[in-house]
Image 1 (cartoon, rainbow, N blue to C red):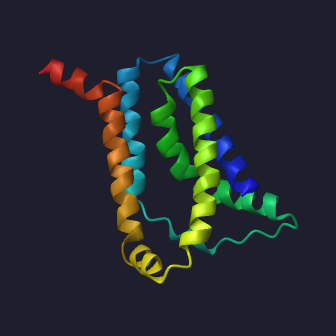
Image 2: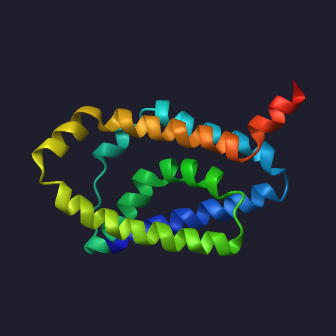
Length: 155
């Protein structure tokens, strides 16, 4: 759980820093174009990461390295466009919120993983549901950044 939590914090922080760097040079509505990243990830198949194995002695370090190597692209594509317009206090609230949710989700997954019906649904539809979530996040970024309203105002 600690490795997963640290991975989330690292990727959230990287997303925030990169987003702030981009925001220093461009207006927020233009950064709404970053919403294309999660949409791209929804339609991009990356099956190679499933075959990676960590060979570390510490379970925490092993989980952290595996999480960063497998989930960096997905998390950055989601968090960067969402965090780009956040203030530093809101970012720390987000870190606390996502950190708490990370712990709760890991505990919940341990409980739910043994339910056969859940396993069956996730095996059959989990990837499709993930792709729908990524597309919705991308569309949300388009809308929340002001990109949509800016483009509508042009016409």
